[in-house]
Length: 246
Image 1 (cartoon, rainbow, N blue to C red):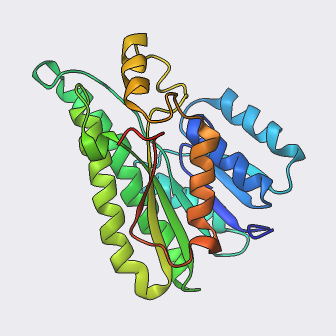
Image 2 (image 1 turned 45 degrees about the vertical axis):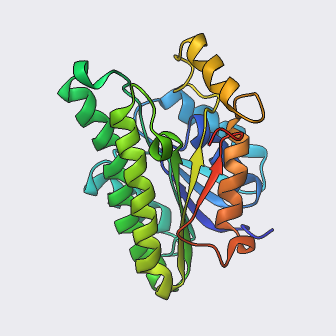
């Protein structure tokens, strides 16, 4: 298996899309380090589920929105071998609301939680990839960051920034053999989207070519592809997994 014993870090790796990504890499034989912030029960359940897979999952509690937290995560993941093969940036939240009524806290929370981990984890992760001049970074973005969405100015701003960040970092790291890409996800069935009103879900489904919402496993498959040797000539790109909405 291509990812046998590969060292993989997944932020927000114990729930939703991150959970599916962690399990997919572990099934492919990787040593996965899944970061979480608060939900201990979800972390324990994920680790238990991974017991029968070809690889392994270690859950690490860390606040990756801080440099210290992100650095500790990367250090823990690379303590055994000193290198990092794949970094998946998935940590994120939503705090929807119309701009005229949006609180400063809702703006700050989304920008801080969705962008600071991207900066800190990439900064520390890249340092573990440079020595071998190889590695793959995959960031989970959203169609809101491409097309915008009413009531999501904060979220759209953060996800649009993640796309620009991806393209800039890909140019920066390409000469060092490190590839940087993003998956632009549509509406995916996760805890984070479970609170949407049914009319919102129906409107999104009606706008899609496939006429349904996506599953976390489908996003995980896109992440696995971008991290694999099959995507060895792909960098600075955004793979859209949205059922045909865009």
